[in-house]
Length: 466
Image (cartoon, rainbow, N blue to C red; front, side):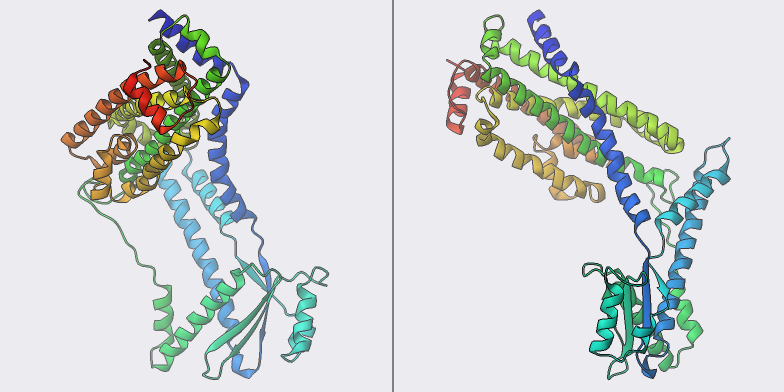
């Protein structure tokens, strides 16, 4: 037992003393923040396109006004969303703080992220006065080129076809930018719809009221916290369950990969042979599994501490909800149980594979199929958020290799107790079976120079190193 703990301590300190380990520990939350902030920064920094509109002929009269009206309606919708966000922020503001400050911040943030896509500018004289044809096209090219006399991103020519339907030709300074094209298409479609209704004798005010109508839809469920309307608090457990599944997957695969690389490195440097002279293969395997488990727990603790501090500082109300779900709802206990079982299965398997290998290329024979298996829960966990009781999810939850990830994702939906206990029992039984198989393979691989293959791995399991 003492030798096992010494190996575990050695394995842990080999990683904990490196600068790279602590940098990687901080890298995950940093990239999580960056990953969430970059799309917002892109949206907030997206340029407002300068667009000139030209009506070609008397038949196009009124189409430019339709585009202007569409822009005005979009601006009103943005302001309405900002007001709604401010109201929700004020309602969620904890007692003792200034609700107006939170509401103003939410409204300002949403306003900065929902700038208009385009603004209308006067069409240059040479474009507006040119007849459709080569001269007009040449004028447009000059104004959309890099040396244009005034900033211009698009020129829209509005007209009507032979049937009187609105149509447009959209010139843009970038061939890949279809923002103006899509906006003009929607604006003209709305204008045509309004004209058709009016031609049918429907009052224009009725048409406008119909277009502007936004229904109020509220969700209710007998399983909600209040037995009625569904709130964010009711949806939060499912979000936490899905996030727990992905986190569990990341932790287990990270720990198992560290163990694989560690064993491979010591195999190639003949360190494993030195260790075998003073400790048994079982003690070495156990010590390495425990040591890397401590590394994984250190990463989990660091990520949890950073996340808890950030959530408590920036969203205290949501932090209290998360804490209640993790502690009061028992999610944390389930997470620990599934992490132990999942880590046991994959860690000992990866360690056994590593004992046969000296380079990552040697491990590809068995790692390929294993990684294909690990893709399955990544795909199906998304489905568990909406339909956690779907037959395919329930069946996959009983397969031990998938149980840790899918069952933790399903826990917020309160699956039957017999199902949870049964799946967990199967997971731990399979984990113990994997420990037995991996122990025999590790003993054989550590004592031989045989290259890894399905045949050699099977022979090692069967012979146990004899």
